[in-house]
Structure formats: structure tokens, C-alpha cells
Image (cartoon, rainbow, N blue to C red; front, side, top):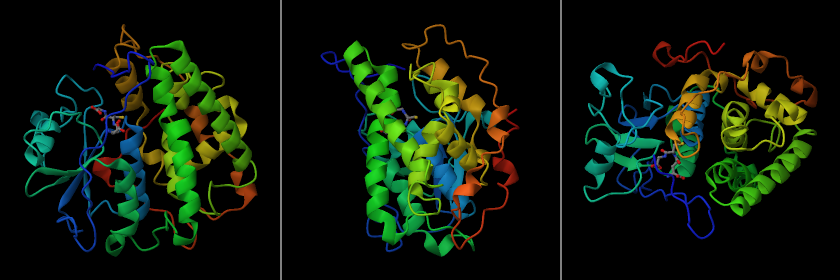
Length: 333
Ligand SMILES: N[C@@H](CCC(=O)N[C@@H](CS)C(=O)NCC(=O)O)C(=O)O
């Protein structure tokens, strides 16, 4: 995979999300909420797609929105369904996610990214607009949420959640990539500085409260979690985000373990997919494509002690049950 960078500044150039239609309760974009109609295509390696996996689990949308898991290793045609029998997604019947992009727009020649939501009857991609996908799961699919589903985007906290999400996107979610893909020292230095300054600030905030906003789990925690869980296995080494490991930042490490041990979070994480994707796909960063054996993952199960800060993880709701058997990830250690 070629990593696009600006030759002048050495900065990573992120490709825009081209397909931004929304699936809504009123169907105003032509895509109404309808259980069984849409397939969420993910890679368990991808932090942006993994948000969707977590939100879908927490809200109990597994029956309403099915999921396709792509092979963590892309080839030159991008994401492929080589984990499935005959290398085809059993529901969409396609071998490459690119086929759904082309079905939606035959002239499209941009990046093929996950997460992607595909309309099963037509085989067309509806959206790859990942920031909106999870918010719409929370706000448009309410009729199909499980009983006891938490409110991950509560009205009274939306401004605060949006503000934190913006900072976390710029200085954490995206900054790790900008550090790792930089081709000039100054671009790397800038991303590294922003990342650790923001992590310090988040750590300070989370030393006083169990979750980022209010006293329950929200969309803001999910977006931070998917970067933190990849930190020691990938970003610390492969992306050179190495001032400290996550496991050397006590507050953030306990916060990440708290979420990991919450049903709906850790049970979506596949460290094998995560490590193989980053170390094998980014040949510019890791030309030998060797996948490191560490770190030892067993410490993710250690007590976190965050209950002392109070908080009600699911608010007035309840945790989800175990994942459907077909979606269970293998034991991680
Ligand atoms: N287009 C979005 C999608 C999220 C994303 O970057 N997904 C990655 C996997 S972690 C991907 O599918 N990359 C392939 C590509 O964009 O061609 C973005 O770049 O902001």
C-alpha cells in the first residue's frame, strides 16, 4: 500500500470520505433504517471501523445490522473477504469491498476504506463516513436498540462530546497516523508533540472522573478507546509514538483497561488482526513486514480500580450480553 504524503511538508494526506449518505429513521437520503437491510463492513484492525463494532454491540444492533469482517491484510485491490469460504462475503457475494464502491459509483477511483455500510439488496455502498455512522447508530436506529441500551450520545452532553471528539480526532486518533506516516522530521515532531500534550490533558481529566463526559460511557470514550487499545501493540513502536507506552501512563492505562473489560469493548478486539495489518501492510514504514511478538497482553485483564471514581458505565441501562457466537474473537492470550 502506498501511503500518500505531501512532498513539501512530509505530512500524511488523509483521503476524504466520499460517500456521505445517511441511513435515517425518516429515510430522507433514500436510505431508511430497516433491520436486515444493511451490512457493516469492517476490519478488526482498523480503529475507525472498530468504533462501529463497539457501538453496535453496546446498543444491541447485531441482529438489525449484520457485519462482514475483511482480511486484515489488504492487497493492491484493498480490502478483501479472504477470511470467508471461497474468499467471498457470504451475504454480499463479493470478493472485494471495492465491488460495493463501484456498484455505487462506477467512476469512483478513490480509496476503498472501512468502515463501509452496504445496502444488501443492491450491493451498493451507502456510506463510508465513519464519524456519522456511529452517531446514526445511536440516534437513528433507536427503534432497534436492545432493552437497556445506553445513551451514547445524550442530548444534554452533545456539545461537550463534540468538542472532545474534535480534539481527540486531531491530536490522538489522527495524530498517531501523522507521526507514523510522516516523511519529514518536522511533520513527525509536530504530530508527536500534539499527541502527548493531548494525552497529558486527557490523563489529567480522567484522574478526576471515570469517563470523558458526564458519568456514563459515551461516544467520546469509544473514540479514544480504539486508539488507546492499539497504542502499545502498534503505535508505540511502528508509528514511533514512544514518549511512553500506554502501560506507563497510569491513568490512561487504567481507563483503557476499565473499558476493555466492559462487555462490548474488549470482546470486539483482535490483537492479531491489529498487529498483522499495521506491520504487514505499511511496507514503507516496515519493509521487512516482520510482525513483533509482543507485547504481553495478559495485563489487559488486571484490576483497574476505576470504580472508586464512581460513574455508572451504562447509566440507567445494562451491559450487553456476550457477542453472537459467529462474531466471537479468538482468546487473546
Ligand atoms: N477515508 C477514511 C477512512 C478510515 C480509514 O482510514 N480506514 C483505513 C483502515 S484503518 C482504510 O480503510 N484505509 C484504506 C484507504 O483509505 O484506502 C479516512 O482516511 O479518514
